[in-house]
Image (cartoon, rainbow, N blue to C red; front, side, top):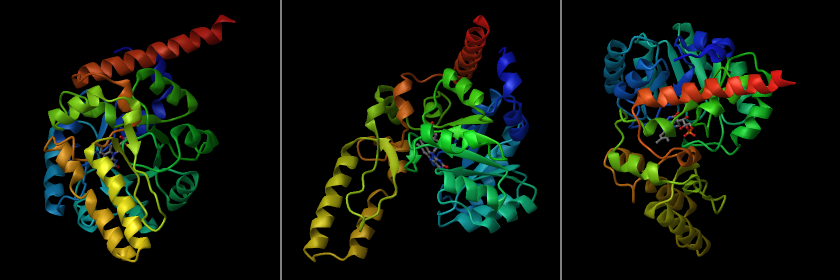
Length: 341
Ligand SMILES: Cc1cc2nc3c(=O)[nH]c(=O)nc-3n(C[C@H](O)[C@H](O)[C@H](O)COP(=O)(O)O)c2cc1C
């Protein structure tokens, strides 16, 4: 694939990730396994294994399997709030994985220091400008600036705003942008704006190689952008961790549960702690139910609004050809417009 113009402006991302194209497949719990990482790396992109909350020894095995399967660098995505996070860190430190991505809540300074001391590059998500600043102060090597259009656990600020608050201020580390990106044209514009590369999740679920359940992929194919909704929070006594997922029977039931619990709290029929416990328990195992078991009515069908931009499952090779071809043509078109006057 001819990527002359792209190559002239995305070198920073290529050098940072050590791959041909700085297009990252974001980690997705229960989905991002060695098969998906290899499929992306085989096309010249970059991908992450998702640690989720798997036991530490299982993660160590998956890392070894992935290292043996791929020829270019990959990352491990560690969720800092996962109960097995300490075991995940040990597994990564004992491995030759070159890049670590911290997700969930932001990492402690020590987590960053520890990984860097072991020779790993550290990337951290940033969903607000203040988190981005703090992560740079903690010494991360790069940021993944992710807006609320993204699938999965999200912040509250859109990509459009974060670009202006963070990317345009040119932090002194490479910035990869995610949340709402699914097309080559958009990739071209992100790089033009100064991004080192992009991260996508939703689009890659719709790759033929992805091991997500076929019923989840089928649901993605039919979904419109507006169906990928963020979890509402009705009462500050019952704080909700925002997740963007496709509307289904369970999301409706979850709304009703919250309203019932608020009424019961007001009537003194349930304590705030017990109500919170019920809220937190509701989605337990939800992503597994959708992504592994294919129960798209009752599971958590995490998806970004970019789900509305794609309407077919395609082989990874075709996805990359389309993304790269469209991105390169977009740059040619921009160049043509700039030079026409
Ligand atoms: C089904 C699903 C599961 C996800 N799980 C994780 C996860 O375990 N860790 C993480 O850091 N991000 C997770 N994400 C976010 C993705 O890695 C990626 O950053 C996001 O999908 C990018 O936005 P997009 O959906 O608009 O492409 C998940 C996203 C989806 C769609």
